[in-house]
Length: 569
Image (cartoon, rainbow, N blue to C red; front, side, top):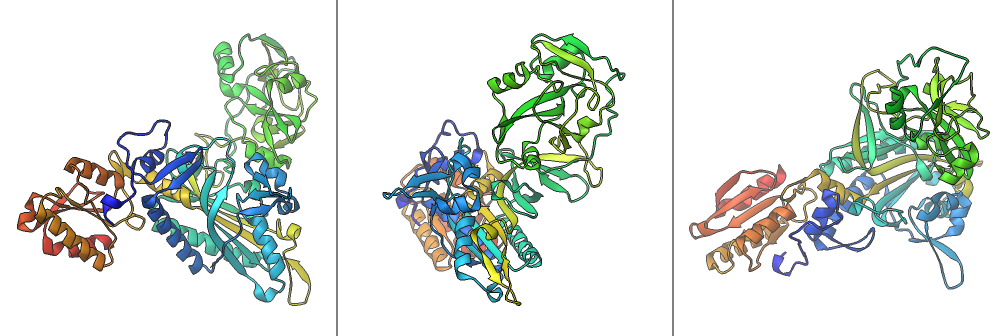
């Protein structure tokens, strides 16, 4: 490819309102352009990388037994009603109507469509197991698209679906997909980890794992044990019970009322009363599927809303607004307490162990109560694992300290069981001729998100540093001056040699200053750079690898063999 004709509009300055390094570099290097919030065009250089990611994914999926197909983007919403997910997805599901008034959705995922397809065409155990996958654009109306390709409303995804006769068969398929994902992300030269995860709106009846690329810009928190192999997303993570005695003062049947003006937060109360955050029992009001509930937590603990939602068996849960809080407690935020509440109260196991008195809201503005004991002065309707693991916690399995990192979710594998096959009629006749539901799994990889995640882990102050398997080109040839006929002749000769040898090469034949060419080369991050400069008259060129500072001077005749050697390492 000749750079003079390549559509690659680079930018000198970092675009405003771009927080993620990957977003900045994708725009600056001319790989993508934004059309609307969360919607991007992929330019030739970006598309070349995406195709390489796709090819790696495709190869490993086929090696694991998957068969590629292509499913419709437009999905009749009747299928979503049948599965029960129409309401679950809420406003993220982009809906539209055709000229006849029939409602469709732009597919955010394809469980319903693939299940309906298999239900119609597979009836016998002889056709099972089967795994089908596609690489396709997906659509989700994200409330807050951000970080460029890391959270968009239109994105490229690989989604696969498996159908087995029984759970033993699903175990085999799941392990094959799990192994394939490790191969895919390893081939992309990523630092990643697989963690236990929550199934979310996809749902399912068995284990599920997320594959996380470690990055400071990641929206997920990855919890890992420093000793054993335990790892989980923060939504799923558990830690060992606290070793604190949790006796906040002498037990007293007499509750003391305290005047605590202007203390709407735990921090305010700690400062005023000279206590620790763990001495406080905060009461948070949530709305779960439209009904208010109260959650009691220690002041130094956070609610894990995913665990709470799953324990309650509801579809949606969110913090109540000021009006709702006032209506159930007669007090504003910060002064709500569990005593006297008529709504259901949920309390974490840790808080239930308190044997002394804690501090709670008095359900009266500017007042709190002291010496309040769970089980004595108020009762919870249910106790459970509602708190979020946090720094300082230890592993539930071995007692070693837990570590917390940020991660970008790039893949997710699920054991779905019969969640979709039962509702959408995906059944088969077994050996005895008896009808059985198929046991399903699903497996997703964010292809366009991978593009951004790779850049997040591979960059420096000058630009992108592409891993060799994903680089848009393997070699960048730069004649310093196209007005120098010797430089141009040697550059052209090397260019043709490498093309003949099957090497992907970009020739910078632009009439630009050397500084501009070198800056663009560093920004683009092509693994190998060949500079044809003033020593070209003696048949000498400069060889440099993007991830190294070292520069080598090579004889023109040895360049091709050196490039071939470097490409293999």
